Image (cartoon, rainbow, N blue to C red):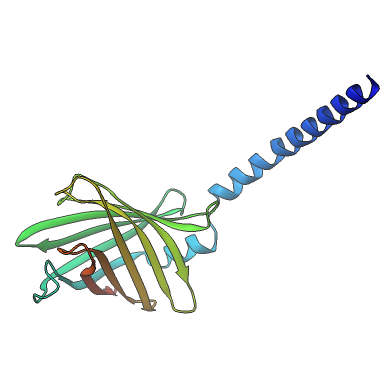
Length: 191
């Protein structure tokens, strides 16, 4: 009987020790989660108006269509999220898009959502920044309007300097294999 009581007492002490430790950590975890850090400062360094001539491929064998585009980038939510307001003309029609790009302090990943006037779905991607190559690589899913199912999508941003970068988008082509469907080199407009 003493062994059972001793074992129960040890289990209760362990439980209370873990519980009290867990009650201290969540507050710090939440504070760390909500506090902008170095990656958010990096995101904020891209605030401004960016202009590009975007190339778009519907068929990898055909030449791309080209259109001028503008992306007005601001920061929001206490400096945690970069908001992009994109405008262009695509396939002869006005096009608008909005991105929300952040850095998830808990997951240690960049997270992006994208909505636009050519889709009732939302693109969700996440990924990493490689400071050695100055490359932000994101991947995720978008809705294929033909099948109604998720389709893979990938975005690669290569930062040339503080005032220019190239953004390339990849997704499933007509044969189901990955193809580049959009690319543009953006230059920050001088204020």
